[in-house]
Structure formats: C-alpha cells, structure tokens
Image (cartoon, rainbow, N blue to C red):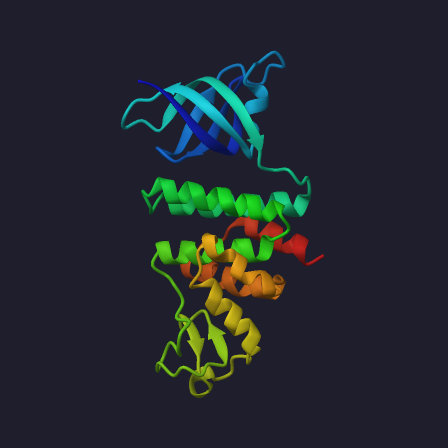
Amino acid sequence: MITRVEGIIVASLDYRENDIITRVMTKEYGLISLVCKGAKKYTSKNRSSILTYCLSEFIFDYQELKTIFTLQKANFIRNLYIKEDLIVLSAMNFASDVLKILSREDSDYYSLYNDYLQVLELINQNRMYEALSVYLSKASRTLGIKPVVDSCAKCNEEKVVTLSNRDGGFLCQKHAGTYEVIEPSRLKKFRMINHMDFEHISYLDEYHFDLIDFDYMADFFLTHIDMELKSYRFLRSLLSL
C-alpha cells in the first residue's frame, strides 16, 4: 500500500555504497526505518529532505508488521534544527534518545510525535531547560516512574524540604536525613514540571529555569530508568563549560 506521511528524521546511518537508512518518527506508525537508495549521491532528489531533524513528507510502500521500508520519494517541509549550535544539537540528540526509549513502551504514536516535535521546537527557542524538563517528566509518567511531588514520599507530610531519587520524590524534614535542603522555589518548579503538559508551558514564563532545575529532573529520570545515555553525558559536559 503506497503511503504518504509526514515525519521527523531522528537519525541517519550509512548503508551500502550510496544508500542511507533513516529513522523517522511518524504519527501513524511510530518510529520506522526508511532505506533511501542513492541518497549519498549529489544528484539524489531526496538528499536535502532526509537530513537529521528535517520535517518532511515521505512516500513509501507500507506493509503491516514490517518496520523497515524503501523510500520512494521525500518532500522537504522545514528544518527543525534552525539554530545551529552544538548545545542545541546535543539537547535535540538527548531528546531523540528519550523518544527511542518511549517508543518501545508506548503505542500512542500521535502523542509521542507531538511531544517530540514540541520539545525540538522549544529547544530552538532558547527554552531548553524547561522544555527538556517537561519532556522528561512526561516520559517518567509514561514509564510509570513519576516522582512524588505533592507530599513526602515516606509519610505524606505536605511540608517538604528536599528531593531524593532513591526514595522516589520529595522528603519532609523528618525523613530528609543527610540530604541537602533544597530551596523552596526549586521544589516548587520541580512540582510544577511534574504536573505539566506542553500546552501549559507558558505558565512557566514568570519563572527562571537553569541548569540546576534541569539536573533535578534529569537525575531523577536517569536514576529510575537505570540507563546511561551518552547523549546526556555529552550535553551535560557542554553545559558545564
């Protein structure tokens, strides 16, 4: 069945002498792979439409139960990597790795696609910290590892003073132990992030988000998926410079 869908190029890799395999996120089929024959040739009509982080229209022969298809034609729509900056690119790569984890657990491709598109756009709008934090909080909810943010994770006391990844969320003074006390304003932002969707991100405009705020959400997420992501490690090294 000849299919025509819009999708975002998540990654590309060389395949054979002149071919490329692209990983594409679509609303209809989730993450799929397209073999782009002859795409490495300068004469290829598809060459400019299959660059990483391009939003393009793809035409291919879809067959149920398959996840890799041969591209017939690609039509460029727009480039999502509009601010050429190594930190921006690294942040987008990190978001892509999170998407790959989510795509293995969630079949709501429409929501996965829209969230991914929004986080990429917000990163390019100088809203990297809050965008990635909201994206990670939504990912945590999808994966069933949402932190406790409305009370102490141990006793339900509403007055909290710190955050513990090991204990699953906020802790009150009684259970804080040796954990460092966190500023109330940062705890508030962490709580907001974990109750938020992208459609409400404008509510964060009056708050200043920085690397520390992002670290709280990223550390929680990575602790609970028990996985090291090289893209995060590289991004974090750039942000520390």
